[in-house]
Length: 586
Image (cartoon, rainbow, N blue to C red; front, side, top):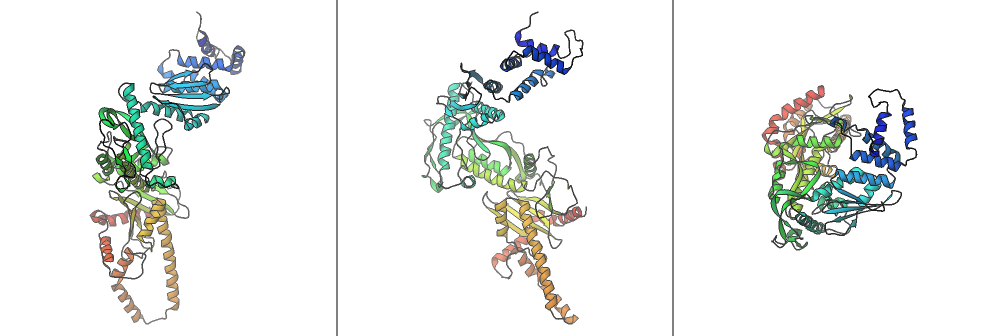
């Protein structure tokens, strides 16, 4: 029986690998086998061998499915590619062909063999190579458009980053996954172009020439906007604007709707009415997609729903803090850790190690949340409001995540400071800790008003000495570092200074104070015991002032202090103190 040339290499690898046609194992060394293969193929170029391997990959022998992952062809091809380092034009072309077919795209090579066309019904990529395999250019052309050079794709292929290049091919294909014929898909692309132009117009609002990227991210109407040069990416820091197909029809604009970016009220642009001439009913929606799912509270999700008028589907509610911990662990850990972990150890320089207990709260509706992967919308006016909600949520998540680490076991016997992070309200939380000087419970309440405004309140027992940090100062530290451990380190450092200064003053007083009769000392101590309630409460609330006044603001602050955290926190103060002390003893 004659054997096709394309299969000859495979049979040689099997028969000369020590197994005869009758299945009898023959003793043959690896060196002898390789020598036989060299003699057989020494007159043939590597390009022919590569073509033979690729042909066999596309037309594999019928084998059980279980043998597919460890196919000898795949292993052979990888070894040959590593040997050649994918530098030749032929190897680069074959890599592009294989990757494109995996993504369901068509591939054509020019007669000269130096240009590879990756095509679909709605777009095509033109990859130009030199004779030695070095990349010259990459051009992208969408339906009805002239090809444009894509510098990002050029860089990826020059670095041989085929995984990232394949992801972009996938994004390009997904952008046109709209039900209907090619005309309907082309209308979807026109709608995406109109949205991009409106977003660009909004990005110019209140923008100066010397504005930097960070300022745009924090204050820009649409954040820091990067034009789409590849696939479906109009990117901020972690979100992508694209279009996706749906089962229902939605009215989407086919042309820009902003009349004049500066003509609206409160620096907001004015939009044209969405008439039939400017829009079309399409089985699609605009989408803000995230590279990683974002933990969002139920209230934030409801705010987005009211803003866009479109419900986010496929959400599964869970305790918000559990989702934040999961997301933080996924970013910080190489291995999967259980989301049931609630104790984390954080190390900071020049400070004892911190131990944080994350109280994930109850099943209250305002403490529940979901992981959101994408946000659908149909009008460009929704984008600034959605971004502001996302900024607010991410700022809150960042503060909670700063207490999470990949260390949930104390690996040494070093000194520890214990903290408990407890949900308070929808956008606020409390950090409980033992007073650095006394043994009573203290608390810092952090309220994330917006992504740019944070309020803090240091709450102490009236009988404990003040820590001399004002609430405004703590808020400034929070906004500058967005890290709870760094804030707590600052508070404990300051407490150490206060404690040292008080000891020095006491020593000076003992040295200078004349001795008095015992009766006079007893009288003075009794008089001091009558007044600590007023002075202590004042020092607790206004920690940066030494004098006592009777203003209404101080009275209100004192009343607020006495009703710390409502019924829940007040009833749990003693139990939290006992828990922290018991953990410290252990």
